[in-house]
Image (cartoon, rainbow over all chains, first blue to last red; front, side, top):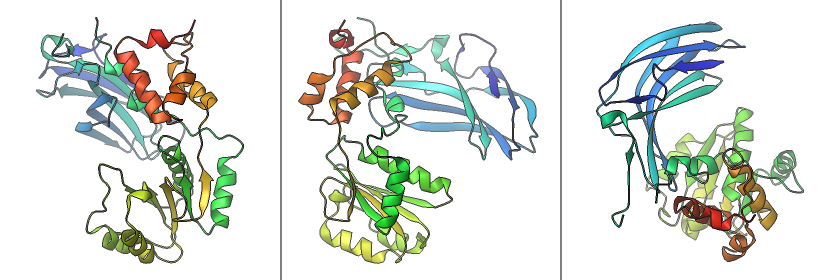
Length: 122
Length: 201
């Protein structure tokens, strides 16, 4: 079992905020490492873009464990959504080599509120 | 009208990418056996949006799970040409135990295709997708049916709209069985807040 805990629900933050992130894992088989990743990706009709902004690597992990990180969020890009595209921020916790993973999404934009994109006609 | 956010669109690419190939009348194991009987050089054939790439990914994953190294070449109408150094790079990389997957092999001209095939080590497996038969023996002619589209749409809607029954027969006919285009149209319908018009009660 993999868990990522963020301090707020819903998880909405401002760019540059320092976010305490608690991660824990409880595994059935021995694995070599766990990675916590701060990522953003696009969702929509076309090809997906993905950017890994920061990675924390935990080695010699044992079958269970937990870590606490204080993560300073970057300045951008902002979380936004329109009909054709959304930009989504997330923390991902991935175990290697099994590739088991979990993900918690959050909003990061000025005012801690997702920017809604409208067409020019609207 | 409120924005139908792309992240909540059940027909967004991230959801489509998770769709597994739906076997009808055959199986993954059967195809792997047939691929072996074709000396591991064969083609998945069919028009656009008929599941060739999805099946190719499925077969490649099966080989990767057995420890085979899979190399990919993807050619599209927008990007139909191999990079200048690709064949030399493949010659350097490929070993007889590897599998080379070429998606969109019909985009290559005959000379490039011939040069590429000649550069492969004798035992290297090669699985291509192509619109027309003839480049390699056909492993499978990929086909779609209205029932298949119906199943996929239900699967995509299951999480958020389990009671929705979107009528897909016209869609399938309009796009001549190209499931990718059908699902793109459903994406647009959802984004425009018009999916309910296809929602047959």
